[in-house]
Length: 271
Image (tube, rainbow, N blue to C red):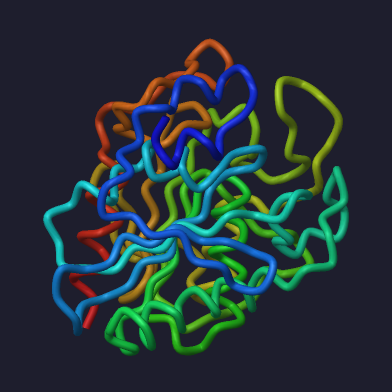
């Protein structure tokens, strides 16, 4: 069994056992762990990729395919604590632990720079679901980030604020879990997992713009350093993935957009 497979438990997790183990290293950061795919050359960018609730680093590696990009970048896949990411939602259910996950992400970035030779001027964070929440929170609190991206994530109304960090968001008007118009996060009609801002309000607070400054199909520019892809009928899934997913549970998969490629193209194009 490969190294990733040993990390996975539960029924649906069996779908993810094809994650390649080559070129991966597991690193301990205190009592936490992160998987690293080093760049073949030093001096390139670093990307921290944050998994969803009730998920693993191995699953997000397989889901997104960032490791398959032909880019000279250091990739870090952290593992959340047992209670999930502490993404700043004060009303989260189940309650998050007291761990400082923004500081943990910063540790991962520092590891990429000090031990793998990444460029400290090109540090990026991306996340899906609650990992997207944490990526946004990192964009508010870590001033040295070169950019953040959130896919199907959001921010607590208590946290939405202006930021100069370049931002890319992917949200769907039909997301059954993270409501586009804001309100309680719910999975499969269950109890609220905490409130998030409406997607429009998040973009307004972050950028200071009242509305998009340019629209090209599903792509919206909100000023010079913020982009949102506004999907219509997509479910709560990573767009364009080839990994096995349940559209019956999470809604339709967006096949018109490759989230991994547009996120990396956005990061790569930043000055």
